[in-house]
Length: 121
Image 1 (cartoon, rainbow, N blue to C red):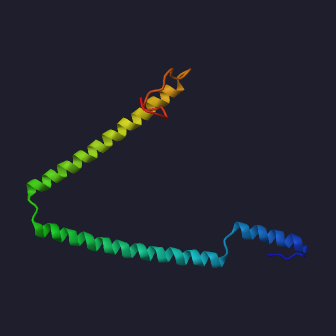
Image 2 (image 1 turned 180 degrees about the horizontal axis):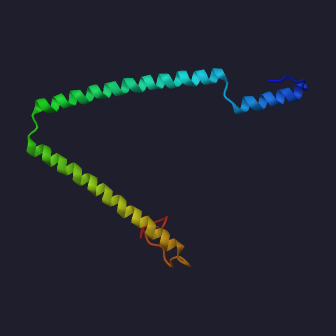
Image 3 (image 1 turned 90 degrees about the horizontal axis):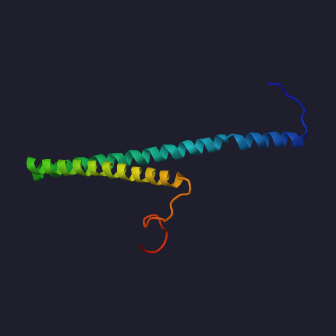
């Protein structure tokens, strides 16, 4: 590194530029401490959630859920997921449809009740 004489205003401007571009060492240490504290908090929450899962599993095992009921729950869960995926597809197709309608030259002559912003149809 070489040293050179610089006018004070130029030195202040350069230091200000560096200070604005880079985080200070103290700020960096504080960010690390904050992040470590947050990671520790999340670790405690995960530990608590694992304990809750173990408690619920033990409760289910003690209650003795029969296989038929478990299959019905699994089927209901599967059907709910399939329905959600299908509805998502329907909504995406509807958005694509209205985007295509909006791109038509001249647009639509009468707005549909779903797309109108006011009153009832």
